[in-house]
Length: 125
Length: 131
Image (cartoon, rainbow over all chains, first blue to last red; front, side, top):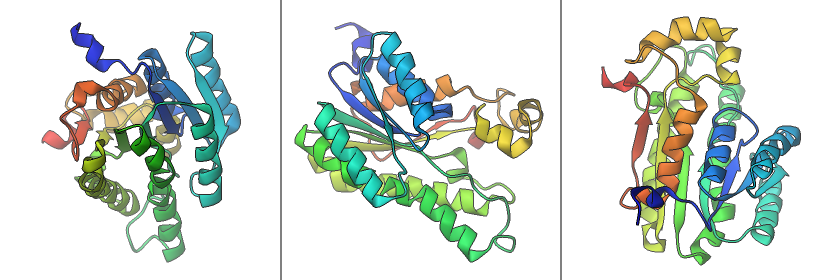
């Protein structure tokens, strides 16, 4: 076995929320390069499509999906589609997040705090 | 998303979950109370889930980047040059990261190359937390 075979993701599928831009996009492309099929999940379906298109143009397998990962019903619907469409689901990257409000605890309101906790933690649940 | 995907992963006989955390999950920065609190919680969630799902051969790790050149940074600093000037020197290599540099670490955590790692927080932060 060549040393780099250990880094192969062949015959595996990955779920990547936040796949439309930034780190999530780069991870989706790198996973596909390593041989994984990638469920490119994003709130913005156009950006998910764009990432998926790059993957498929290079001969990889990608499934672009729109999902608000902070909404339980949306997550369940998306997961159902992924399970129906892809086999070998062995990788999940919990990366999608809202933008955090700057400030000390004196600057933030309780509703800002709760909103951010939801966008950062509930989406991983 | 973990709750929705875990059953499929369990029926496959195992898998790898990666939580994108931050170097600010283990050290603080001024005026980032909400960010630091949630990233720290994510690193602890990683350890808890690693403990709970090791019997199902599911590895759970955190991946903590330093500041990376993304749109999020432009939103925070106004433009990327300002981000590079202010945040770059906080990293030992005197620059911001590229998304691809974080993605390579994610491939490592997702693959069998990291088969003995679970419950860890992999810092890919150019030594931000080293000093």
